[in-house]
Image (cartoon, rainbow, N blue to C red; front, side, top):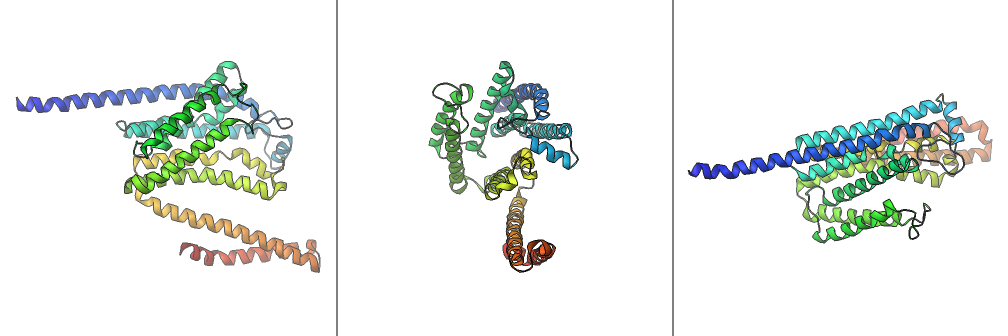
Length: 365
């Protein structure tokens, strides 16, 4: 009899755990079905948009200008090939998010924080392609709004709760509730009288910035005061994955501000900006490593190398640009810039190469 009584809680716990796993996987499958429907419905509209040149300033995301189409032709690519390549990249992102999400839900079905991350990745995968549905039929516009709001909710909850699954500090839950409540009218009713429709004046930008700043401060507090050593390693993986798209965005914006001529409508930099979402592939990979806890001890070495070689690249680029400008100005005062341009480039290149190892050792130290 004592054995029967002691076995009953174990059986009840196993039954409850089994129901939770079935529920979690069912919820995940429903999310996959919804996002896949929205994604595949958006592909024909997205492909047609990519193959149509925009006029004036009314360009949609990834849509080519006539100048960019001319630049593509100069490097041997047609508009149709550009559209096919862009759709292939979007599909790769969608599949990658699904695969990582499936691994997480399969390996950690009893962890509700892992379930939240898996659902967030499922919603993240199709969002780039589905964004063009905002100009499609009313039904698809409504689906795009639902997906956008769902992704916003999941992103905020994941970054507010990761990796422990608890709010830190505890009062952080109330600003999150206010933020998500404010997102409802901003997402579903963006053109009402109280919501200006211009891109610069939309209140959603201010609300989003405030929400991101609050989540970032909460994560910093969690990392320093609450997280265990293992949870800090998980946080490092996620921060490393977010660093790639943020660095690409900031780097592109900085180049456009410093060198306006390089960001013209027909330049290669403006064309490369159409694929600025490619570094987003680091986000699902970083969450996959963090949740599945695979080789977490290597993250410090990876961050170290990323900081060293990233800083080295920026410094060398600055040195090279300064040498080219300085030597070019000096040559212009003597025999003329055209005659000495090859010599200036050779000297700048050799000097920059000579600085690689000393600068790397100094940064490593």
